[in-house]
Length: 55
Image (cartoon, rainbow, N blue to C red; front, side, top):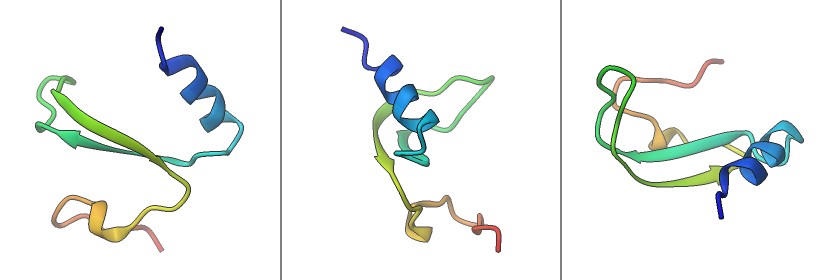
């Protein structure tokens, strides 16, 4: 069973606001995804080096 439709419904309903993904760097709009998690708040430690949250 595909988990994407229920995840998208929860994001549209504002239950989750962020998807934190771990994997290889994107190249030509593709990457190997090793894992992900859904979050209500974004932790600055999850951001790539050199990227800051907007204020």
